[in-house]
Amino acid sequence: MLMLKPHFSTNPQGHLVIGGADAVELAERFGTPLYVVDEQRMRENYRRVYHAFAERWPSVFVCYALKANSNLAICKIMQSENAGAEVSSGNELRNALNVGVPGERAIFNGNHKSPPELEYAITNNVLINVDSFQELNVVESIASRIGKKARIGFRVNPDVETPTHPYIATGLRESKFGFDVASGQALEAYKLASKMTNVEVVAIHAHIGSQILDVGPFEEEAEKLMALVVEIKKSFNINLQFVDFGGGIGVPYKPDDPELKPEQVAERIVTVVKRVVEEKNLTKPTIVFEPGRSIIADASVLLARVGYTKERPGMPTWVAVDAGMNALIRPALYGAYHHIELANKILEKNEKLFNVAGPLCESGDFLGKERKLPATEPGDLAVIFDVGAYGLAVSNQHTAQPRPAMVLVNRGKAEIVRKRESYEDLTRLDQIPGWLK
Image 1: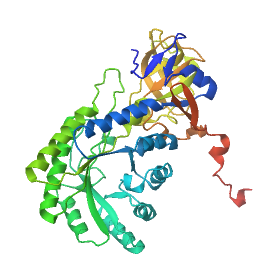
Image 2: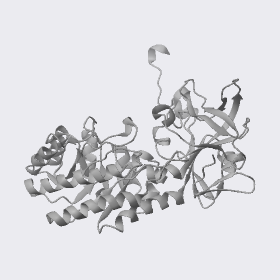
Image 3: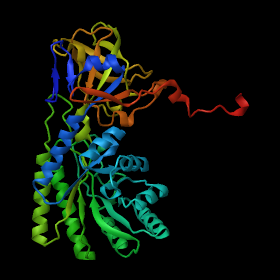
Image 4: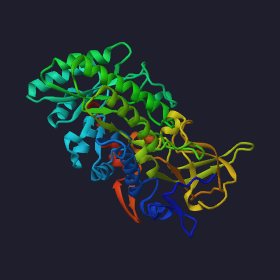
């Protein structure tokens, strides 16, 4: 089944066109495997999320989640849209600051932030969502030592079940993330922080999971978070400035997947916030949302050259391409689906069953199984869709395969934004000890 989203097209040569550029020409110019990112699609996706909330609530802060793809060009595009940055490591924060995101517009999440990372964040006035009692004490200690007041919130675990893969469901009580709400830990964290002299408590944060295609969990999250906001105000007289709902809007990877529209999510969340604010006479907080996947996933494809095909009587034909789980690990890690077509035969009928394998020495190294494609032969160009999120970000060098290059396309223009790794890149950190020389 041919699945082309509106930002793709075809040309008279029967080739896929992305961002105004012929995919076949991109592969010939820059080589394969190759990530291709459509700048305009990224901007459209971000603006749609921002406007979904901004049209419903007066104070909105949308932060791009760098964990999805932290390439500097991607970060710069988001900065130019005036997006904030949601970061999960010191180096992600460094990326955000380096492209011009002010520290005040960055939010630092994660269950293990090292003392040097925390000091870097505090120095740059970054909002830190604290994830444990021990981390709270470290933040207080560092802030006291360097003479700064740390801006903090707490990540809370509201125990919201989401219809997604267990590895990316982060809002259940058994998750490693956040302060438990049901046992009273979350309220205890706010109580302790309210008595500290070197922290300013300004936020509450939750993230219930990733790749969510049902609006219901977001509404449940909003109800539970706002109930906590009310209790925090009542118990400790803290007026929280930011109520942060994390991200998690999924994308339709399969041709028949439903689309969860940002407008649906914003409507449910804002309705709850507005009702509680009015009923409890609260100061209107800034609503924070942290999209990553929904911004970058469908703005990017992976181009991979077909090397060999292998017939198996009574079974799908194996087709081997030059990119595998080193470039896109999601199918092997999660059993995730990514749609596959032939970019040079995009208009031809998909009539034969194939398994699409990578070049790595692992049986789990596949990009898709039992996929219908046109008659496929060496030299064809496979296109794997929706790879922008957690493609490059979790790529690896299995069997000493260099990571692919990445090119940005914008209305027909194309430029490399990440060079292809070389053999020297693979080995430059290795050292042979003296006794082996």
